[in-house]
Length: 78
Image 1 (cartoon, helix red, strand yellow):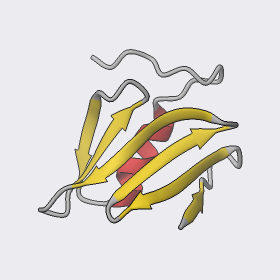
Image 2 (cartoon, rainbow, N blue to C red):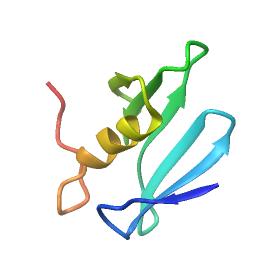
Image 3 (cartoon, rainbow, N blue to C red):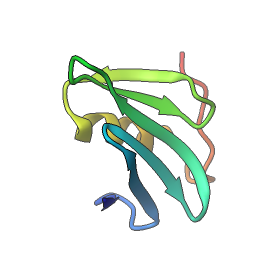
Image 4 (tube, rainbow, N blue to C red):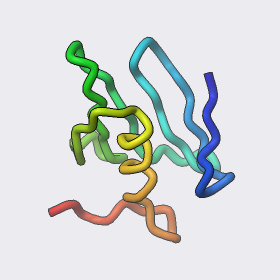
């Protein structure tokens, strides 16, 4: 399954395994989303740091994408 972002056509999501989605942009790894046993979607940045837990997959994906600046770098999360 591939999911192209509606906010940036260069952002690509790929379903790697059941409940595990990886985000990339022009071959750069941006982060991933892992759905847990309670159907929560946990978003992780490009460094593997959890950046949020969400009720929906779409919200978690949006959080991963929001962490990307125009230069393609993830800002630090407080």
